[in-house]
Length: 360
Image 1 (cartoon, rainbow, N blue to C red):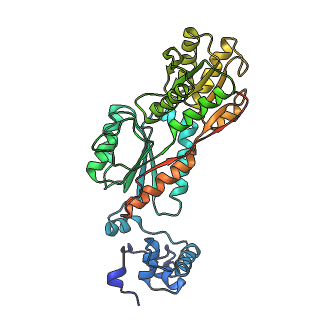
Image 2 (cartoon, one colour):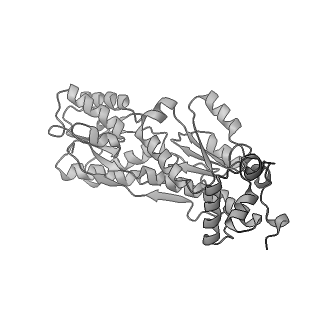
Image 3 (cartoon, rainbow, N blue to C red):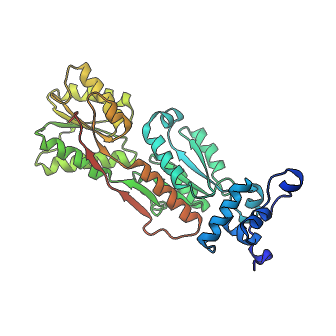
């Protein structure tokens, strides 16, 4: 027997019976249709583990048949949850919508939340004013947890969220883990290993004057991919020539400008490892402008293996990073925290591998 007083997890707002007055169905009617008590139906709705798979399936089927929609406001009053989580992108809206990485990671997060009652809220912040506004919204009155991606050094949000006690997951290891944030869970890819693979492949094909266009050095991905380049060059017995190193902000425009600078300093370069596919697109544009053939004169390797890689001319050799899986793991870790679980391990590093195409 269900104990209504002990097991009821939220109170239904008064609703007319669909059988009597044409209103929307109530939880009691769902329970009756499924042949269980109202408390059991409530536990299914709240994802309790104290329900058998058969009972859960029966209640969910009854919900679908009746078209039951829970009263979120009433549920929040009892559970003290908002059933909402935020994905905050520390970039402009133009970049958030224009780069394949962000769409892919959002897709993975949505898939990771599909079997939960959580709604996903998306926001992007870049200016101080946007940060200040976002800080007002990221409280337990508005969201149950937060995922942060594209973090730059000195971003105040990670420390602020920990101070507020909000479950938090970072997409990518920060450039510099500070003492008060080094325990924040994160999901990242093996950026340094991917950089090494790219350069080792170029060396194996006989290239010797290998340049790199590195990402921002206030981001973990930018630092680690450059570190992988340096490690591979050093392991080959060569000294790293700083004239072969330039930097960009992961955009095509930055890749174009950096490639021009590299050609001015080292016109004899015969390969370039670029820290993002978008920058690689820009770099190949600069090479075409300079009359350099890819890959005959200069081989090019990107990083991400995005949809752009197969659309470029020639198709781009690129380090594959599992972006959608990164999003799924971020969602899983956040849900676990919201449910009071201890994450072990608190950090996840996903592997990368090189996808060979015609550009190298």
